[in-house]
Image (cartoon, rainbow over all chains, first blue to last red; front, side, top):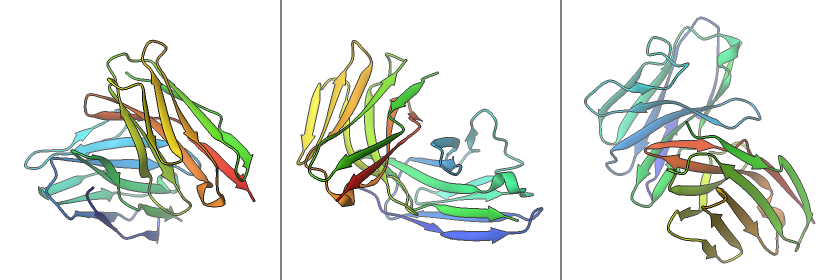
Length: 112
Length: 110
């Protein structure tokens, strides 16, 4: 299966600032996804990162708050903008291959 | 859309015993059902999956069963070991989107 490198693994940020999370895959993949996992909760899909076009956002998530880039088939970024304490979560990227769906190790974000 | 329910939310078993986690789904169009294990501080790892044209799949101590008619699938872990302690998530895929269960925190007591 694909190997995903996600950075940073954790960060503590001031409210009102932005954080960009990077996801690098060791092979070209068509499907890349960004998830949020709030403390003790399940995974919620934020958006699908499409190469060469705008990301597709799920209900409750908007591009202004969570801008996504997908410049090529091995890389994507998620930015959490104008952060508030409610954005404290684990953010995960995921990719789909012919052998299933793989997750990165996650970015644990704390907003103070 | 799809709705996935998972039970139990917590499960404690003695080392060597079996553990069973159950999930139900609502959309008969869902055709792929993976199970993920998430250890503390890590991302979910795929441990086993099953497609809708198969009723059962086994990989060493782990097995998954699927009942399409009843729309439920289960994870079975036999001869549990302390390293099996983690949070387990089921999921159902409808199209390209996954819907996750709420997770089961499994504790294996030595």
